[in-house]
Amino acid sequence: MHIIRQALLGLTIFVLVFTIAITPDVQAQEVETANIDFDKPIVLVHGIGGAGYNFYSIERKLRSIGYNRADIYAIDFRDRSGNNFRNSRELRDFIETILESYDVDEVNIIAHSMGGANTLRYLTQLGGADNVDKVITLGGANRLGASSVPNGVDFTSIYSSSDLIVANSLSRISGANNIHVIGVTHLGLLSNNRVQNLIVEALED
Image (tube, rainbow, N blue to C red):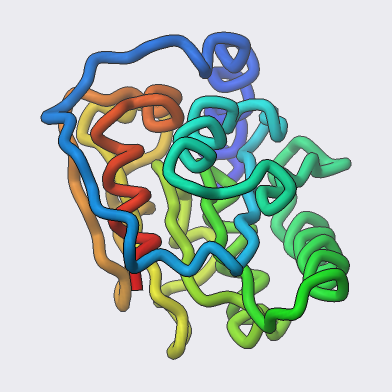
C-alpha cells in the first residue's frame, strides 16, 4: 500500500493542473436524464494530491443535464495524502452537514482515485451506507477501502486499461457494476466525454 500511495502522490501531483484538459472522446453518446433524482445532492470526492476543482468538467456536465450548482458539493480534504482513516471521517462529517440542510436522507457520490477507497471506508465502517444512494468511482483505488460493496448502495466503478496509476484490479470490486473503458488515462477519466455519459447513466434510477 505504501508503494501504491507513493506512486499516486508523485505522479498525480505533477499533472493535476491539467485535469480539465480535453481528452480523446471514446464513443460519445447522448443519454437520457428523465429518471435521475435531482433532489439528491452530489458529493465529489478527490484523490491523493487532488482538490475539488479537479471535477470542473464533470460539474459542468452535471449542470448541463439539470443539476443546480448549489446541489453539487466538492470536498477538499485537509489531508491530501489519501489517508483512509482521516479522510473517511472527514467525508462522513461533510455529508452529515449537507444532509442537515436538505429534506433528503441520501446523497450520491462521484469519487476519483483514492477518493474511491475513502468513500468505501466511509460506507463500510462509518455507517455511510445509510446516507448514500449511488456511488460512481473513476479509476478508484476501491479495494484499498473494502473488499466488496455494502448492501443497499448502487455502486458503479469505471476504470480504464490505459490507467497507469491505479491498477484495474483495485478498481474492480465485488457487488459493483464494473465498467471497463479503453484509451482514457487516469486523469482523463475526469474529463472524457464517454465517461461523463456513463456517469449520467449510472445516476439514473
